[in-house]
Length: 307
Image 1 (cartoon, rainbow, N blue to C red):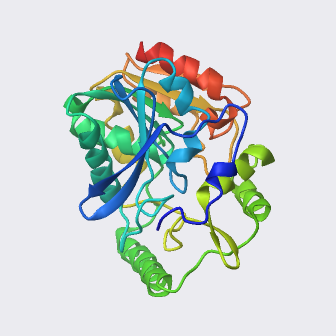
Image 2 (cartoon, rainbow, N blue to C red; image 1 turned 135 degrees about the vertical axis):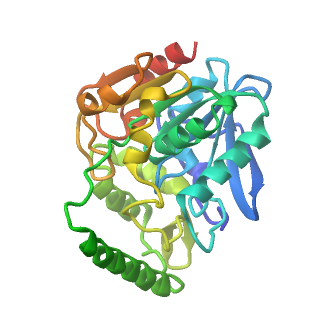
Image 3 (cartoon, rainbow, N blue to C red; image 1 turned 90 degrees about the horizontal axis):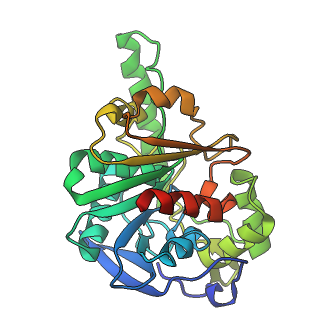
């Protein structure tokens, strides 16, 4: 699904800048939209967005990294933004897509920054292929492991049956699902339910670049078949338990305020799992979207780490 009918050209927000280049990458038959800020000959930095976001949500953050002498590369995940919709979605498919974009950018090890789900994806991929990356920044992207369900083994099969039934019901209905239309103002107000700390002006900018215009109004471009509640098969504890031996330098940035789309991670709980070399930064009075609330400060800290 392309960007036809969007109002990207008219959208503006103080400090935000559209990418310098746009290209496409074929990831196993799924077309991904890739965006770049900065000199094409500069050292690359991969920028991975979170779930139900898209690459252009970095419009206020990525230029600050690019202006410091980097080639910042991001992309819309399958089913998000202007990337192609897929028949099925999974954590592993998203990671394969990520590696396809990295391969299309450079065959040398590079730095990477991930927000939310993007940070957790990177943590998993880096542990498997540390030779592909040099430094890693997780912007509220390290979910802490949750407790296992306190049920007897015989009851877990019942839980599994219910989960599979719900998933199959959703798949059965997904073919006919469409997102609710509205004005850009209405889309911004809907997004505010999930991003209550972000300004209305920013959310209107986000709607202008993240929605398409149909005959009956604007719709978010994200595939309606996607739903909240996990990206499986993946659990937070799989990554958290391996963090003590993380193979490359890591900077973990956290906020202090809870939000509907956040991980609700207490950095003090995660600290014992981080390697001794890890750098931990906590931004007070900041929510899950740290790089949107504090783009300049986040960029300064990230650049200090990358240097």
